Structure formats: structure tokens, C-alpha cells
Image (cartoon, rainbow, N blue to C red; front, side, top):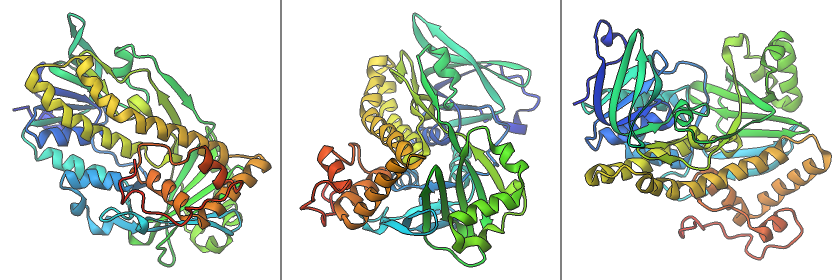
Amino acid sequence: MCSKWQGASSKGLDVKSEETDIAVVGAGGGGAVLALALAQKGIKTIVLEQAPGPPRGLRGEILQPNGQRVLDQLGLLNKLPEDSTRTVSRFHFCKVGGERLCTVDYGDLPAPYNRAVVTLPNVAHHAILDAIQAQPSVALWYGATFTGLLRENGRVVGLTAKKGTDEITVKAKVVVGADGAFSKVREALQIPVDRYFYPQGYLIAILDAPAPITEAKYFVGKRTILGMFPAAGNKVYLFYMIDAGSYDRVKSKGMPALQQAWTAIDPSNETLFRGLTDWSQTAFMPTGRVRTPTWVAEGAVLIGDAAHAMNPHASQGRMQAMVDAMALADLLPECLAEHDYSAEKLKRFEQARRPQVTMLQRLADEQVLFWNTANPAIGFLRDRVFRTLDRNARLRYRVLSTTAGLRASAPFNLADRLMAAGFLPDPAAHAHDEVARGAR
């Protein structure tokens, strides 16, 4: 059994070494799910998290259908507090000013995950962390910083960490790097990284709506994006695209200037925007992409943003980390049973997961090109595609099922792209049940 060495309970202990089956670095979206999934299989796991405790910051979260399925498999979906979640079915894409371009309805997806679930900040993550605390086979160490890897005969056999003044050695069969886009585990493994920072990020805000809002809106314009998503308790999340590094500059101009900018985008919600009364209602979310030539090494593996961060336009970054975790949790018991922790064995995880991740990264970059554009011609084509999708159930369903995490292959081939742009007719425009029939 792993020691429950964490937080204040560890104060005064002189723990210098530990031994476990799996050591996970990072208790974020992927690391926490992996730890819980392994614990439910009775596999000894130690999780290192450098933060002093569970996250408390402002973070808007939309649970896509594939993320809901993961939580359901863990027995948590129906345990999320009702007063902290909001089910949303319809998402309207609009031009700046208010003209509707396209509406996507999650109700078209097959049950039971035929909706999006918007949660208050960190609700799902806290539910996972709370469930971990109840598992005897997992230890979650807050305030523990990864410092290096242990190797024997060219294979990773554990890690070193620091907690307070204690230097800790953890022997493990497999080390998992779930420590984000700036992964120290990836660096220690000497896995090359292609890391790209997008020139725009998002100012996130949470406001109280003067009247209930049940449907989401997403406004696009000339280098302008504003998303509004209803949350529990008549709260609304706003996602507003701003230049990277400009958050302080936006704040220096004052709240009235920001409210006016939002009102120019959506005049119908001027009263809602007046609900911004304090900068503590806001946060900044930078955006970046991570690509690596491999996710595995001898005795080690990367998951989530450490392996494949993507732009939030894909609506799948955190969801893909969760799916990674479940896929790896299915493979690791076999590794333990066969005493095989080789890169060749762990590569099966990467081979199963990489196609969908690569597709989503490419799709997100295409969306950055079209949605973030200041080019009038590209903006015209973007709006034309949205209008086509509004009329074409087949193509609209492909986009929806991809956003929902239910497709591993790209939603459009060359012919589909020409149809979406309005250059070719689509004889199957009214078909929309591909996922129900088992679409890839």
C-alpha cells in the first residue's frame, strides 16, 4: 500500500524513499484521471503535484461527450454536483453584430452523451481528486517537485523529487509525464519538442446573467472572437480573444473599455457585460501547441499536453488528456503482468492515440487560420462555410462529432471541403447519423 503522504499530513515526516508500480508526475486533467483509473484496478500509484493543493483559479470547462464518457467509466459523471453543472445542447455561431451563421445541436448525437456539460471552475477536477483520496492504493503528494529520473541499464526505473527540504527517491516500474506543455519529464527523457505559441490567447470572464441563458453563442469577425457559454446558477463564461501578452494592457484601459468592446460584438447582451465589476472575475489563458516525435521511452511515457498540447479551438485539449489516461490505464496492467515496461510495449498506447490527436491538432490550426483572421477574403470564406454547414446536416454532423471527440479521422476530405465552401453540391446533405452507424 502506498503511503498517503500529502499536504499538511506530511508535515514532520522524514520520508526519503518510496517504491510503487506507477509514478505519475502531474495531477492535472490527464494525471489525475490516470491515477484514479489505476487505483480502481488496485495498482499502486504515486502522484507528484508541484502545486500546494487542488486548483482554485478561474477556469471555464466544457465537458465534451468523450470526456463525459470517461467520467462515467470512473463512476463520477452522475456524482458531479447539480448546482455546479449546466447542460447545453445548442451552440450558435454568429457574425460580430449578431447575425446567426450556423447552429450546432448536440442533441443530434447518439445518447447518452448527446449534450455538452459546462461546469463551474475545476468542478470535475476536484471530483476526480476527491475520489483519489478515497483509494488505498494511490498516494497524492502536493508540493512535490520532480527533479530527475532514475535509470538502470538504459531504462527509467523511477524518479527523484523534492518536497520542502526532503529529497525523495521513488522507485517505479513506469514513470508517466503528465506535467503539461513545459514537461520536465519530457526534458529529462531528452525527447525533442516542437512547441509553438499562438499570437493570441483568451481573456476568460465569469459573469452573473440578469436573466437565464440556456444556449451558447460564439461570435467571429475581423480578428475578433467572443464565446459565451451558460453555466450553473445563471452564470456565464466569456472567452474573448486578445493578443498574447496584452492582458495587463487590457486591464489598464479599464472595465468600461472592455465592456464596450463586448457590446460592439453583441449589442443584445449589453446588460450582461455590465456584470463585470472586478478584475478578479477574469483570467488569461495562453495558447500553444506541442508536437513530439515519440511519447514513450524505456520505462516512461508522456500523456496529455506533455505529449500533444493543442489550440482550444479543437475543444478537446483536456478531453484528450483524459482519454490518454484511460487508454494507458488499460495497457499498464498488462505491462505489470508481463514485467514488460519497454518502449516497444508502451508504444501500443501511442499508436492507438496518436491518429486522433494529430487530426485534432491539424484541425485546430486550420480553425486558427480561418477564425482568427483579419483577412477579409478568408473571413468571407469562413462565413460562407458556416452558412453551408447550417444547411448541410451531413457536414454539420461531421464537425459536431469531431468536436465531441467521437471521430478519429478528419471530418472533411477534399470533396467535402469543396462542398462546404459552396463549390460543389452535396447529394447526401441531409444524412447526419454517421456516428450512430459507427463512423470512424
